[in-house]
Length: 302
Image (cartoon, rainbow, N blue to C red; front, side, top):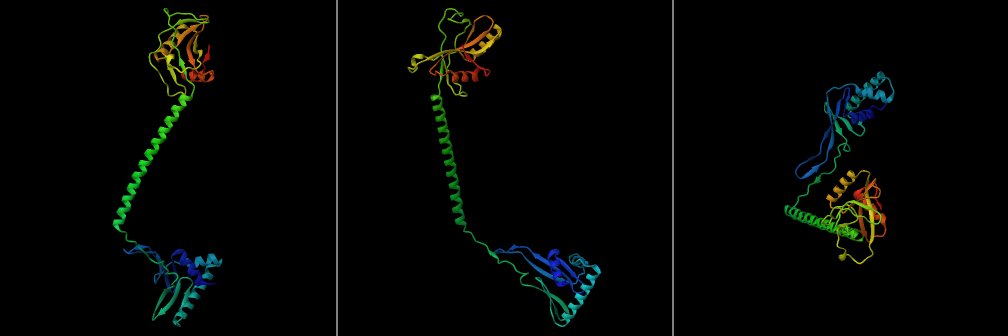
């Protein structure tokens, strides 16, 4: 049973170890510190005192050797007697990886092994030039300002490019023009297929809804339009079975600036109709745009 090895293991694990007849070994930890010139690393040392401690070493050895506690006490007693005899004869008692017991005159001392006392070299502090630090700080400030300016310019370019792309998209997207109602001396008029029940004057302003992809221009002067083929459609926006409901909806749409009319075929179903002139022959896009604007349930060409 190697008692000296168990003393070393116990000391490293728990920080102190009492050896009957020799004293208590304790590990002292020294933290790192800065002395104004260098940064000193942390280190360790071992001290020997005559303070008695518990018999935990015996329990530690018993657990690792799977031996009875009484047998361990006998081995420890024999070990301390042997150590005292060797010390009296001028021999040293080595504790592996820690150090050794030695006797100087009438006292027992413990000398720590150099490997256990090893401390990494100190790190010298670097003295900074205050002027150099000021120069670096000034350069950092200028660099930060330039970065902010560049970011603002980049955001402006991106915003301008996005707006230009959006305008190009609106110009390239097919648009339609709401026609003015044909002049009439009477508010009730008939066409070839429909009877107009109610009609009021169109709005006097031009309305652009930027929330939808197709631009709508009301009451446009056709003389100023490009010379392209114009397609004419009567689009039914909403239908009602009572005249009162239809007229209420008609008033609301006209108050919003829309040129719409109320028509009926059989005095049973009343339809709010928007007469559309457009350059776009494909009616799906027109119906989709008007549906999103006026009736998500769907609009159709009369």
